[in-house]
Length: 367
Image (cartoon, rainbow, N blue to C red; front, side, top):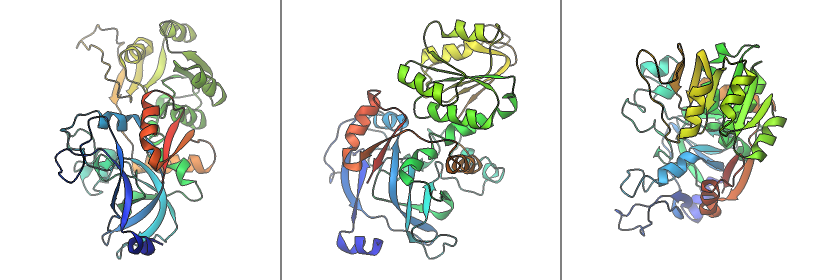
């Protein structure tokens, strides 16, 4: 029971990028994380204390700890993919019981602004203003879930039923984000459409499964890793090919020179961005999801190799409605995350393995 934990130690572990500005903390240089003891979070009347069952490690976590020692995110607990069980309930909360399994929302939206009331809570005007680095999320501007416990507003929890919190945690981003990107172009993915998905890592391997489970489109999956291509062949891809210098010609040949109706880029490095532009058909759509920093030239009026009528979106996160869809698919056994488990104390090794490309699917920290 959480009361016993308070009385026994009053502390919890958390994975933190330490701040050199806080005299009480030892200095940890850029790109270094450390597991520390921290107080168990106190909860307000509208909050729930969640005992963390699992916290996913994402490439964006790698990006955060590489932002330099002056970033304001230093000193916070990381982790934006979080699931666990309800440990303590605020006095004003209804509808939850101790022991319930839940997943924490990726975006901590206000629930009251125009965007939230329109169902676009991933674009909340309060937590995602126009100039924001990213919307407010656990581990990104708010204490994250790479810890024993996390305190969250009750409205930022969704029930997961009998799903294992360790396997469910990555759904908060690794499945939510591709689900939102897919939903944004769902009308284009008819039975005679061709969809290309580039990158079969944490997000990409979930996108593949969602596409296979919810669309009738032909799916062409690409990656540089033969093992991930083998995964794609057994999880819904109609064609799995290497993401190399011959990929564009192969896709154009497979589509009789017309190109793909939709291209999802879950990598975002220069070669994949160029590939996406090279293979999208006229009137098609591209969703750039990966954070690899690639770019393409755009010339108003024509040129630059981009066909007429192409729709492009810089996709981020997803809505609560997208999250409910993801949970339903997972509970039905139609999608599942390939999980590599690490003890919370082994978090530095998990970060190192992810950085070095050793993780197939998603690394999950287990307190």
